[in-house]
Length: 474
Image (cartoon, rainbow, N blue to C red):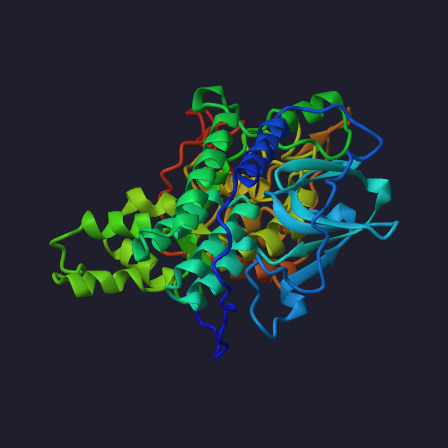
């Protein structure tokens, strides 16, 4: 990681007292909140009683918390948002500011029209939306973790402090990795051994709280607004990609010249190295192989691509959006696809035909990546794909959005009502429109040659045409 000349130092602290029985019991009891969080609770108009000593954010980091980098940019560290802008793609660490002046920091795990749920030290705490003044997101945990890890060196005391910091944010797997690193340096480090036992128990409790694979149901996001019963039934049963499938797609779309933030665990690098011993890209000397572990994630992913270690792609965590998918989300999906093409009266409802798109929560990863995969795999009756990566301007997806008299592929007539009047309207006025040009730019930005995602997915309607479907007129 490029720290741009900044050095991050963690004040050397004397070794703290070992975790006593009371502290261990408290941590395990808090972990039980993970099990409780999985069970539905009846709505309540009042918040659950906050912990006796809520972790309200202090003016400066407490002694047992790993400090943030000096000279941090506030605009990068936090983002003040309204309640209606909350991210729905996963728990984020956030500070909830109440209208009475109180504030609480924890993982924002649930948001509805009536309340927010923040998990504070493993305990879900509910806050009515009417009592919330604002929400402040903290910088992503992985981003801060990478900075601190890169700067702290090999001091086992500081590594243990980092593991405790990760534990408080429920990053148990990373915490165990750090504790293993500390014990490799100092096998007799008593606090590392004790904390490892506690975190292993916490991880076990969390695993037990999750449904087994055969019990998992297809992911379906909630409907945002009411509509006709026949129309919303399409969206309520819409199959969405899982977080693991979405992450795998992100890996395939990474542009190594301007990569998003990546996290690759040491165990994954070990599999990569040990599974390719003898390959020309893997050094023959121990020193050369050890140097691979010190490479930044971008270079390790590059090596993984060169070795075609596809079985390891799913173990790479892509923290941000690849640039091409960000362009699709912002300039296509949010800008016009969902609100023009995927409405309930068009490709989001019961009369959508074979092309059915998800039209809820247009900025969420499940919606963005599921709709993209549907577009990517869809074929017209003559086998033509919707997206032409070699000639973006000729893409059926864009041609269908232009006035019929100016295109090669004309959007079919969409009869509505008793009169059968054509309900179709173009999205773009001409190829000179800014949104059209942005869509062309997005298609050009996608990785080439196009990968064949190893992702099994069954869309709401067939992507491939039946044999008796008539080709579209040109």
